[in-house]
Length: 285
Image (cartoon, rainbow, N blue to C red; front, side, top):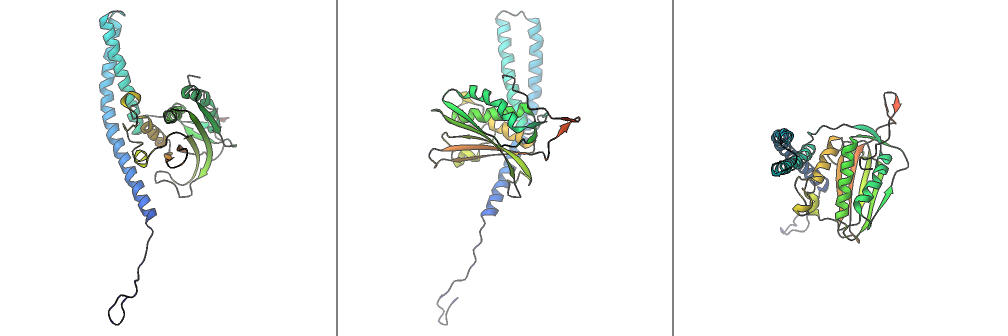
């Protein structure tokens, strides 16, 4: 506004907080990017898997014809071994793209975590302790137990690598209600949150931005394919949930927390009129 002499004496304006709008735009962009990655990875993996099926099939036929000892048998064994590793990678890509069929079962969360605790201790080593903070209530989710085991083991191994000098790994379960304040990929409702928390090196914002992309890794080629977290992302999404990572580099000591949010069943379910079984122990138990 100006006075009678034309000089500016007052300014009138409006401010608008666009933080929420920017967050929604970023979530939409990330979701679309991951969907594009999934479509590309799924298409490539499907075609590549067809080639590997032929390689493995003909290798099996040759194994049956060639004597068990000798140079030819040794070379054939190496070919089949390499094809088997490649097939494992394609399965991970198919899981990330949500094309790998799951066999979900109704499981009690705390029992599922408790059955994994000893196996995780064996993986982590003596300089890392495991602490379980489990909710007092018995809550049930519907997941593929083998795939869920793979998720927790992947997250535990990542946490171990982030704590080369040792530390503490926390496995935490709790119930939450999103009430419309959830990530875009997660509808409002009641969920079980399973968190894997470590007090390791933490991670930067740039690393977190690309964390679930296939073949992205902070490790060298000898220690990972970059598909572990991408596979976790696919399994959790296919199970109707969502996975997030939080990390604070400025905190002393730094820490990182990976949280799975999976739909909570509204009441204790039954299958064929009987109460559901507890989660099976992993095969290496």
